[in-house]
Length: 508
Image (cartoon, helix red, strand yellow):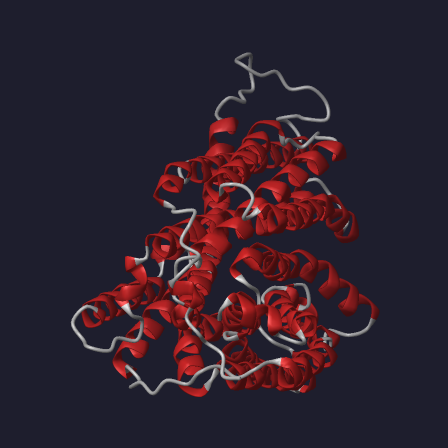
């Protein structure tokens, strides 16, 4: 779409609201059901394994269907696919609320995840099309706010709905907003050009096998003690086998499911690498902070949500600023500044977070992290697509969001596993310094080696400190991973907004 066409869109604001709403619905529903699981299991008489599939079914279906959305948009038109996705997501949400058995919920969550896959990438592609290149920063700021805001408010919103109404409202809440989003897209969005192309079923099947097996491996690994279980070995093997088949097929067939030509674009390739690591850090931190505050420091759910609010505020402030700074400043400088803020915040978490830390420390550090992530996220998302042709955006955004989902899953699973393992190792190391007679530590009340209460009190404190150190180690690892991204900024090209990105895309 050229500059004039973009500015000529008569209902750009209304369409922006509609597609941003679709983005928020998908990002919220990824985690909102987590807090309602105990209530769902209690009302359905479900086992822990069955309840786990309520989350797994959604994540796996979304991961498998995400790369498919790009091909569907090219074949049937972006508007048609997006409308069907929003309606399907809304109907399956209502069905989840109406479900009468745990397996009905799992089935409807599977459908919900499949329909949700197209919401985020196609919404991103729509915003890139209806805004001129010089306003892509603003567009991606709005899109990024929807992506980041959802997981932040989902636990608090889910807990509030479950406590004040029933767990079914965790799903019903999607219905009115889904209807509004679908109506907005139907009324204000123009259809895109449709291109006939053969469907690479083998490529899709092998990629689906790799992504699906990886998601199940990551989701169930902690439950099955990772590679101590034959199931995990099978899932890991299927993921590697599917990836191998997919790569071989992609580079040897004429019309592959995901075109290798996309990766000739240096910005797109570098942006995907950055997104993989940033999403690992972003979503891992979102997943780690609530249990740290609630389980370790004893914060109530609402208080923990309030303590994390500065992080969301920082993200919104940074995204607002980034949308206006892109085009006026070198995007590599903006990304570098954001990464520097994120590195500092993670370093502070690793060195200053403790069981005795005051609330203001949490507010200050998380606010700085929000600033860093927000500035990085918006600028990185914008520059990734500045040199990509407009007809490649649907496929490009689909792959970009697949990488984001994989990064989030890997980050959450890996850091959680490290917490569990390191806590045991550190606990053993701390205990080795506690000796009954003399030595490096002398016990005082209420600790004692001669009573059950004294030993229990001692073990509780040691476990608490071991857990805190394990969290510190996770934050330090993420700090080093984020710092390692800085050299990649040299590969990005700040220009390239003319030419290829201005190919016509919309049928008037």
